[in-house]
Amino acid sequence: MKKYFILAVTLLFYNFGYADGHGSVYLVDFKCDAEAYKNFASMTLEELDAQFPKGSKKLARYHDLTSGSGIVLIETDDPTLAIRHVNPWTEVCDATITPVVDDKKALEILPKP
Image (tube, rainbow, N blue to C red; front, side, top):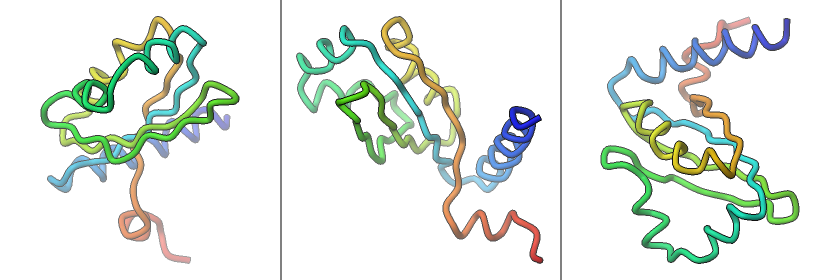
């Protein structure tokens, strides 16, 4: 049941975030194996940033180096660009992509008590 609730909320946020014509924000939650971090460590910041497709923008990327997990926040009008960013890493990382909204948008969406 919890899984279906999360799916419904995700779809609701996606529809509202994407429909307003401004860049939507997608949260990429990832967990990578040691090989991924070897590849990552061999790259420059410029090379890492170049992996974001044109039309998308990295807002932030944070790592928990002790567990091999982390998050990326991507802004784009096209959700397929977030998928295109994640795809090259799928052999060495597990990832989920979730549309998210800020407090202002959440207050617009949620029913008032």
